[in-house]
Image (cartoon, rainbow, N blue to C red; front, side, top):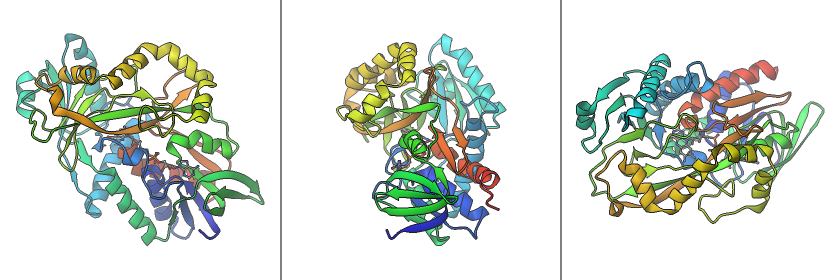
Amino acid sequence: MTDLSCDVVIVGAGIVGLATGLALSERLPGRRFAIIEKETAIARHQTGHNSGVIHAGIYYRPGSRKAKLCVEGVRLLKTFCEENAVPFENCGKLIVATTEAQLPPLQTLLERGTANGVPGLVACGSERLREIEPHVRALRAIHSPETAIVDYGAVSQAMARQLSARGVQIVTSARLLAARESNSELHLTTTGGEVKARWLVNCGGLHADSVSRLLGVVPDVQIIPFRGEYYTLRREQNVVRGLIYPVPDPEFPFLGVHFTKRIHGDIEAGPNAVLAFAREGYRMPIVRWSELLAMLAYRGFWSMVARYWRTGIFEMYRSLSKSAFLRALQTLVPDLRLEDMRPGGSGVRAQAVGRDGSLVDDFSIIAAARAIHVLNAPSPGATASLAIGKHIAGLAIENFELK
Ligand SMILES: Cc1cc2nc3c(=O)[nH]c(=O)nc-3n(C[C@H](O)[C@H](O)[C@H](O)COP(=O)(O)OP(=O)(O)OC[C@H]3O[C@@H](n4cnc5c(N)ncnc54)[C@H](O)[C@@H]3O)c2cc1C
């Protein structure tokens, strides 16, 4: 890269950074925008390692950012896919209660989803749910017919094509290393050269807290990486048709291991949620000592351990034991067999954790003098990406004298 100068630089070419570039360039066509990405290609981390579900917006507290931006995001994303020839499938989803104790939380989910404006949600009894998924054994379920699947890598490629058509430069192999401010301008040092920008949007995903520190903002959260591991079901098994989810633990922001149909036809089971020892720790043995030590030095990490150690140990055990993983899946589909499952891929979630050990549930986006920082954009961040981008563009126009 030869040295670059622009009005706003976006750090991170995951789906949130790309969607932010689209929203900014649409609202301010006369301005210069660029996206810098440390990897050699776009969408290499969370965006390229997720379940590929277009979530309908059922789980999230009414009025929260997640609820609002997810429901708006679904609409924007499906329209974007139609306009850009990115295939998606409205395959629908079941959330199933398998015990009496899960019936009240299932009802709460139905009420939340309805309050959030999710279209088509219905409760169904065991007979109807067996028509949809013949091998599921459950007492009751919610059916969400508009939940869909897509390849977020393909969505990101389509976003990148649109950005380049609008003259927004995406510079890969450019890791932000340092930033200083002089004469109302940010001077950024990257592995690909120098960048000058008046403002910055931090969409650094797993490294968003470190990027914010480079910009002089000490966040009140730290990103803790949670790996999600998948199994792929053998093609010839025919016990699962589409998306089957359990009733999630309300204490935990993750959805519990479930079945997901992929847009290319595979069925995956997972992801679990295992503490990772590196922010890009896609496999158990990967340890990055500097990141691990920073995690251990964070007070919020120990408060989190004190709250969730039982769940954490169980997740590690289930990560090591295929039989334990199978048992969790068999609570949804008893006919599944060990030999139907072969190891699949994995992804690492960027989960912001507060100093009190809480797993930050809502999206967290903060505005500082010269920068906006996306500090928590876990699932359904890919679904909501275009709505998050619009929200950030609005904040940028308000905060950056960008009109
Ligand atoms: C296992 C798993 C399953 C999920 N399933 C779903 C799902 O089904 N549906 C859904 O809606 N969401 C899902 N999500 C969440 C979704 O993937 C994320 O919300 C979304 O991808 C976040 O996008 P992002 O752009 O913020 O982060 P990322 O995709 O991680 O992008 C951040 C980018 O910033 C770059 N970067 C970091 N630091 C620097 C630096 N210093 N300089 C330059 N570049 C830098 C990184 O290389 C990376 O490319 C899932 C996530 C995981 C991990």
